[in-house]
Image (cartoon, rainbow, N blue to C red):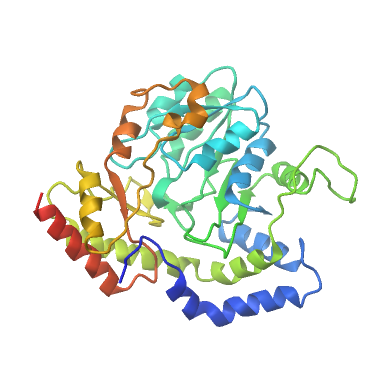
Length: 370
């Protein structure tokens, strides 16, 4: 039996009847694009966050892109973010003709080092883009203070933070707008691509609704501003409506898995477990650990038929596609060091105790030999 970092089949078996009913509901509705399911999910996801607006889009990358665009980002602007993230965060900035500006992360929790942000602000800076990595939030109060001092907007990248909280407030409610991905692996995952942007700002929401739909508002074929075809699919929206009712139980399941890892691996020399930042309630999208001989450990685990993952092995600023930004090796030392040492243990709510035990036992044996 091969153990992977993520699997959906056990969850699907348990939820199959409800999920297939969701598909049948849409197919029998008579409306397949921007119908009742999209509207229903938008209302319910906004309500979950205590916000007035949610705008569903086709994927998480476009949630970031359209969120930035709705906040006024365009060619020549700068967006301050991190390199220790999935590439789509930065691709979305680049797609608008804006320039991503990177700050390093904190070694203890791998999150944006907010103390470095103000020094990166220039007259071209338009938006701060914190990434709530792995399932917990960036320190938002000092980031908000920086934004307010310089007249900047904040867009939270919440692709990995569904159900997470920061000082009691849900991730996604700590800024001017927040982008979510519902890629299947996410804490709240669809059965295909999907995304959304949440906001308390009616003007931002109205702009988002136009630009996800070609730039049209009230009347089809009348383009008010150039936009995109970035609509959330009705089937995925209805699936997400059903799964949203179970989001808190998904998070609770992930926390239970994380607790067991902490209890079983907390005494293993050389293995650094995830640190919980002050004020955070972690959603554990992924369970990222560190070891100085990471590659040897992963290779040894393959002999146990355990295939683990690295989130992320290549910092964005080191990728050839972003060489034009001019960040040389050593420019983000913490990010670069983490990329050589981190790896992810299996993490999903339906992970069985047996599968978790296999990983724990194998990891202890491998590390004991080093």
